[in-house]
Amino acid sequence: MTPEDVLSVCRKAPDATVVAVHMEAINHCVVTREHLRSALAATPYADRVLIPEDGEAIL
Image (cartoon, rainbow, N blue to C red):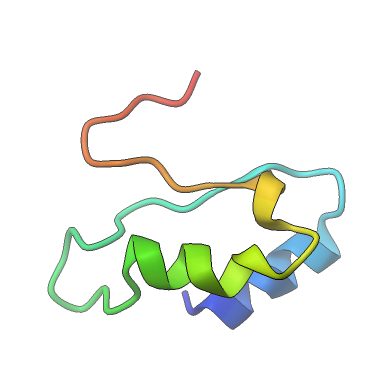
């Protein structure tokens, strides 16, 4: 998904917490964690999108 796709999900599911996974894990995943964080920074959705690091558990 692109950052624009993530923003679309946030808009369509206003009560959801979105967890971005498989970032930088597979060669066809071209969106980096930093790219997604930067794209979300100026939006009201930044606090609703969790971007875990490799091996991090979200409980």
